[in-house]
Amino acid sequence: MIKIKEFTFNPIQVNCYVLYNEENKCVIVDPSCYFENEYKLLEQFIEDNNLIPVELIATHFHFDHLMGVSKISKKYNIKLSGHENYTLLFDKFNIKEQIQYFDFDMEIPNPPSKLLKEGDIVNIGSDMLEVIHVPGHSPCSIALYCKMQNMLFSGDILFDGSIGRTDFYCGDYNLLITGIKEKLLVLPENTMVYPGHGATTTIGTEIRNNPFL
Image (cartoon, rainbow, N blue to C red; front, side):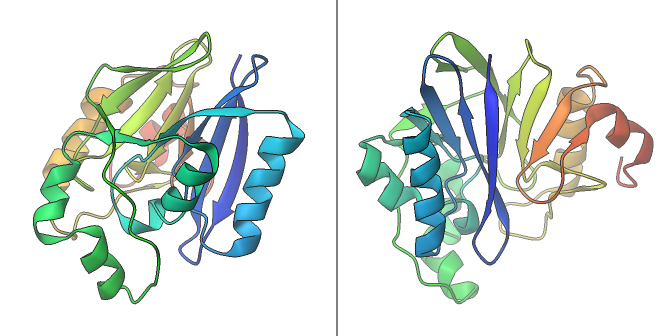
C-alpha cells in the first residue's frame, strides 16, 4: 500500500510528494526543494523511514517543480523521469530561460533519462502508478494515478477549484479542459487529488464545484 508524505517547498509553494510503502521503496514526485532546510527535511524523512528512492519524477518541466532535481539526483544516484514531450519546452522556454524570466537562481538539471508516455506504469516495489498525459498547462504535463487506492497526483493540471494556467509557452486552454474532462473527471468521484500546488481535493468535488469545468 502506498503511503504519502507531502512537503511544500520553495517560494512558489510547490507540493513535493514522497510515495512509499512497506517494502521501503519510494518515489519522489516533483523534487522542488530550493532552500537548504528543505533538502534537510526531505533527506531526514527518507532516512528516518529507511527508504530507498527508486524514481524521481517531474509532472512537467516548469522550473519550480525541478529546483531540487540536481542535488537529489546526485544524493541518491537516481535519474529524472518525465514525459517525452519535455523537448518541446526546450526549444523556446527552457529551464535557463524560465529562471531568468522569473529571476531565480538554481542549478540546471540534466534532461530526463527515462521518458514516460500515456499508459506507462511506474512501480514502487509491488505498487503501481499509471501515467496519464494531459497537455495544456505544458506539453509534457502528466498525472500519476493509483487505481487500487483511488489516488491521483495531478501536478499543475487540476487544482482544488482551479486548473493549471495556460498563458505560458505551449499552453493551450482548450486542450487542457478537454484532457481534464476526458481523462481525469471520468475517474471515480472518491478519487483523492493531490495537486502540484495548494490543498488536496477529490474528483467529485471538482466535478461539482470547479468553475472552470
